[in-house]
Structure formats: C-alpha cells, structure tokens
Length: 417
Image (tube, rainbow, N blue to C red; front, side):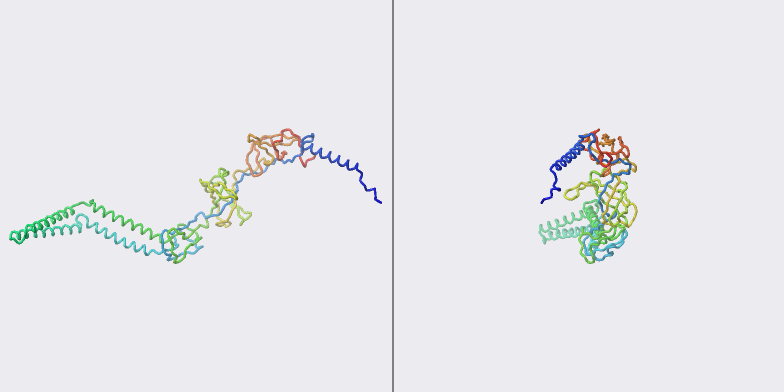
C-alpha cells in the first residue's frame, strides 16, 4: 500500500510560484528605477595618488660607432693583421691587398711623366729640340743651295737640262722655307699651341699618378675608429672585389638604444627627455638613458597582420654598465608627464558627451550628481581631475552610459541598504 504522508499538495506549488514572481518583479522594478530604492550600481572612490602618462616601446641595443669597412680596390689578400674580438685603435691596419700590379702602373706613369717634362723643356724657346731642328734646317738649306749652284754650272756646260736646274731650284726654295720656319719656331713664346698641349699632357699624367697613389694607399685597410673587430669577412689569400664588405668594427663600450615611437605619441617626446630601459637579462633593474635624436622621417613597419607608421628614435645610455650588450632586446619607458599627489579617478567612471567633454557622476545619499571634468594627466586606466566638483573619498558611478541621468536614484552594491 502506498504511503500518502509524503505526497506534496498541489496548493504548495502555487504558493512557491507566487513568491518567485513577487521576488523577480521586485528586482526588476529596482533595476529599472521603478521603485524609490533605485537601480543597483557599482561605485568606486576618488583617491589622491601618483599618476603618470608613459609611452612604452620595444627597442634594440646598438653600438654608437658601428663601421662596415668596404674594399675600395680589388686584389688578393696578402696579410690579415687582426682576428674577431681583437681591439683596434684608429689607424691600425686590418689587412693588406696585393698592390703589385698597381705599383707597376705607377712606375710606368712616373717614367712617362719624366719623358713628357723633358720633351716640354726641349720645345721651349731655346730648347734643345728647337735648336737642333733649326740647325738641321740651316744645313739642309746650305746643301740645297750648293746643289742648285752646281746644277747651274752643269747646265751652262750642257751637262744638265733646264728641268734638272728647275728641280734643284725648287729643292733649294723648300729648304729655305724650312729654315725660315725653324727660326720662327725658335722665336715663338711658351704660350704656343704645341706648348699648351704638352703642358696639358703633363698635367694629365700627374693627375693619373695622384689617383693611382691614392688607390695604392687603399690596398692597406685601416681602422677609422677605436673598437672591437665584431666580424671579419675575409681570410688570407682570398680574392676580394671592390665593394665587398671586409670587416665590421664596433665600439662595445659606447652603446645606444634604437626604438620606434608611433606617430600618435611622437609629438609628446623631445630630445634630452629621460628614459628608463629594462631588459629580460636584468629583470627588476632599470637603466637610465636620454633621448638623443628623433628622426625627421617616419617609416612603416609590419605589426602582426597590419602596418604601423612609426618614427625612429635613438636613446643614449647615461652611464657605462655591463647589463646591456649589442643586439639585446629592451623595453623603453618614457615618462611624458607625472604628478605625485593627483586626484585620480578610473576611466570607467567617466562618460564622453556629444560635444567631446567628459563628465562623471558622484553618488550622494543614493542620488547621482553629474560633474563636468577638467582632465590633466591620463594613464592607461586612470586620469587626473584638475577641476570639478569631486573630492577625495567621494564615490563615483562605474560605467555610466547614455541612459544615465543627473538626479537618478541608485543603490551602490556592497553598501548597507
């Protein structure tokens, strides 16, 4: 036989349903503001505390002096004077290329210059070459004159014909003209065209010699800075072509950080501004630096799936230290502005009006009071209130929206009702 004592009565279910409906209706009514108790909301208190606006960026450590030496001449490597890791000073030789072919060319040009100068000397008025030419022309004329006189005597004796006499006369006239020309050449000034051409030829040879000497000097590669041989790209007996990278020298004692600041923040920083630098290799330790330069040209870098316009910025390290090494990744923190005793409220307690201004809502005795804000320093999640009817310790409405109105009744969660 079934036990009837445990069977629930139908009227009990009806009573429970009515209770649930009443409770739900009361909660909805409170939230919608339908009751005098007001809507249930969250609140947070305004506080006086430090606040700062900071710019964060990633960067890399580089040497202030980083020199990539390029071969300026082609040749085989005859000597290598350094190894990777060696310290070098300004003017120290790095390597020597074979310059024997260039030296032979220099010897040939030097001889060519000597000949050109001697020729120029002889071409000058009173020069040996001109005098020899004048004497030779005079001898030719005297010989032609004697030949003509002998031809006349032979013609008178019937041994020569008239044509033979005419030929002898023409030869004498030609020799005479040569004699006259050589005398005129001897009397010409140094500015004659032949002398000018010879002077230009000498100048050209001298220029070629100077250039060749400069090229020979480049066969010995020297260090232009004091630093460390970071990378040596050639070895003994390698054939090197002009334009080839030979060696990389870096000053490991003088470091800098190169970073990129986005276009929206770049106008907020300036040269000389202090910077704090951190690295994973020295967690918890901050390294001081200062902005050394801000590029005048922006660049585009790849950021995930998109691109970002940024400006290169160089930061000098304040003091020599061993925490950073070249190619380390670092985090850069630039404090743009800061206050130690600011009246601070969270961003989530403010609401932006259509005209761009911001307001907050102070909760006083369960009623909202709308307060216009004058904002100072802004951090990622909080902002400084410069002017407004907000005091330290007052409770502010969290997450006001377009439906929030001045004078509305509210109940702050967590406070006594």
